[in-house]
Length: 188
Image (cartoon, rainbow, N blue to C red):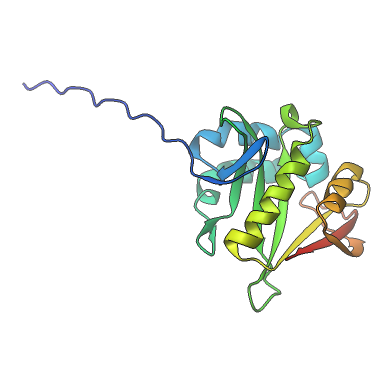
């Protein structure tokens, strides 16, 4: 009987960097991010602001491999925020086309940071980086951003990004609540 030699282990390739800023970089989400992603979904602050319930979190966790494959104009729609030397996953951005835009030039942008990354100015830096990437590399003209009216940190961050306030309206969340939301648009 012939003995099979084990295959040599392949080193994981570093993710393709889509954009960088002073402290962070942007890449597509990777299979290795699954555990940190799933853990961050369950953090109380993330659950609160995103309006997620247990069913939503379970669905998002189970669909992780699928969301990594989603593309808009050939670019990934689920993006990882990593520290500059790529040793820590910090959070994620998600991009979704606005179905109401017949020209396909508008997207919705959502994000959150993991607990260990908050309070360091990284969210503002990441948002500026992602907005620039969406406009310059993906070619998006308008980025819609919404948050609850009482999310003061996110509101300050959005204002600093140069996004223009559009409207305040009740905004349905996955947990069946409808808090008042503030909506902004960031344009080229």
